[in-house]
Image 1 (cartoon, one colour):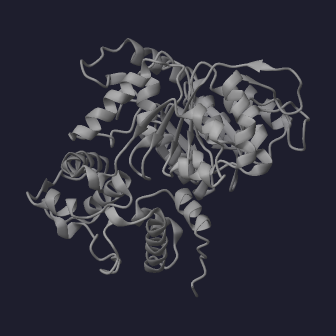
Image 2: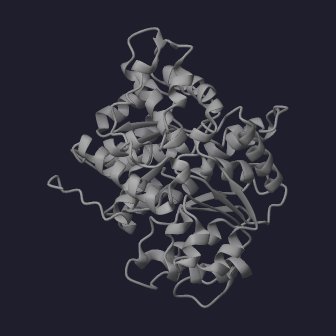
Length: 465
């Protein structure tokens, strides 16, 4: 067990909620356990040294307040965040009196739970330990390694150049950076390296998926709102700009940001002043913008789908991450890293790797890049029965391949590539019987990314297609 990570138990009867929140918290660097019943939750608490409990107030056959009371008696140092979709002030007050340190009403943003965790005493203690720990004498420090996903490793000259560019960008904490590259290449990791290598590292790194925000909540999410400014605004709320004060606001999938929002955020980025919805008082905030996209923003500007003035504001520095197929020398070290990671995680002996595996995998185009390779290694570890991994453990050549009459990737236009991508997604959906989660896993992308692509290409989920 890593002693330098917050150990979180999510106790909620909604399985999809615990799975989604667990994935987010794991990516944020926490050790996470899930339980969908009180009995399972108590079993986890008995077995593992949990730091933080995220507890639903309404559980089948149990009152969350009773569970809270029992937890604070048996594990008094355990910190508890109460969540509920049916909360009222009386319940909030009772929960706080029983020892909960925070309360969130569903639905809430992932960033809200992260901020709540960062206010906890356990987090502050671990942050202090991390700050005073001895740094490694390397390009990426030990404290930085704790904040980034280790899948961004490599030996290629391209990766070393990118790391140097990121560390150079970190030296200028007020300069905006645009990171480009295909899906799955590790753009958020580079953004984290820039943030945690800069003078802003002690403050929040706020990651926002630009395409995941509904039009009706655009202003509220970015600018915040005052209590009573609209139906459902039950309290004052900070927006992303305020939350990121003195820190970094990472705008992922920036190309998917609606045009009306592009116009609204441009002024805030330029002036560093925001006004909450329903308020008239301007608020000064100091944030750095790092954005990322897998599209050509220059082409989108020509098509009038992205503002030229916003592009100029975002790409003061630009870093491009090449796809995995263009730096195949990184495949072998990545495989070794993932094999070790998943073997330890699954409590299985670490298998050897055949001498030819790296060369054989280097001939595969990896449309999902590093994310897809990681997914393939995880599946190989799960099903492997031998003591050595070979190409037979990687089910990649059974997938639909493009017709031989198509031109090589070097001669394809952007339109051709989009046609190929659409057909590849359709073929994979059919193979997975239109199960979106399984399809996303096979493609090596997130389910949200798959849904965005399906919407972009007008791909129906009907099995009669």
